[in-house]
Image 1: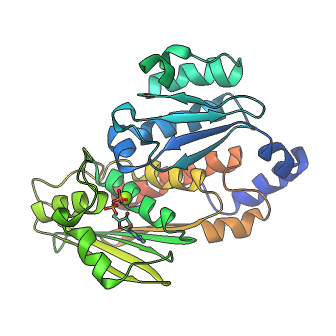
Image 2 (image 1 turned 90 degrees about the vertical axis):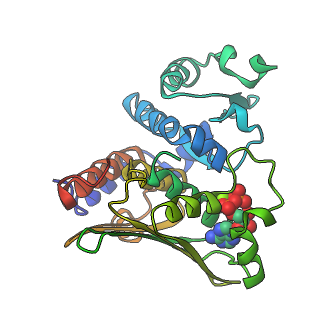
Length: 122
Length: 185
Ligand SMILES: Nc1ncnc2c1ncn2[C@@H]1O[C@H](COP(=O)(O)OP(=O)(O)O)[C@@H](O)[C@H]1O
Ligand SMILES: [Mg+2]
């Protein structure tokens, strides 16, 4: 059974382990397009796959945020990855399966999967 | 959209774009009277009366080029197919309330779908906003209020990994408990 009281323990553990503020502002950001076209094309399962993979691999410095229309409806679901000091990478036509690969290759090993990026669509 | 929970996710995006700080989502599944009511209320920038009229008129939109149409009119069409409707009450500077009704048992009603995925996803992606989600099914109600959660967490953000895990489990369990498994069909 989950209860609100369990949050106090999570809080204590969190405050003991890291300086939350600094660690989390310097990390990588995964931005999922959440406009109507993105949602209709499957942005939510893509988002859920990112949260699952990121917590499974304990990538605590990665945050997931959202944005509105990225601009090209036919390439949705789209995801942008911002890593400090590097150029933004835009992945297109994402699926939950591709997310697992992107998390493993890009977020864990730092290798961009070019064939899934917007550049490969041109 | 294939699920009502996806329409709801989309309508809440409007509230986020309108700079709401608190978004309240209430779902009532009233089997006795055969109604499903979804209410999405925000304290964002609001719309004036004339504008509200135009957003619900699909022929008045400036964005007809869009493949999937506008979010509000899509949701309204879905509701009207099921003897229901979508109405908007809004006030500039105060906020907006969108109310959507469906005949619960209507054959054309899309399934509720993954409400947990919608709500927890919204919280994770917008950890500085507050969401208050209430889902009632007959006599049972599940409530998830980020203000209560925040009170327990202090400085720990809502998107902290252990909190995310807790949110997912708490919501899944809560939705399972009302209705003996919410109407995901
Ligand atoms: N909650 C809200 N608060 C303020 N303005 C809103 C809200 N919901 C919708 N609107 C306005 O109505 C317009 C139409 O919304 P919608 O049908 O969802 O299409 P879209 O979001 O693609 O523009 C929005 O662009 C916005 O100007
Ligand atoms: Mg919209």
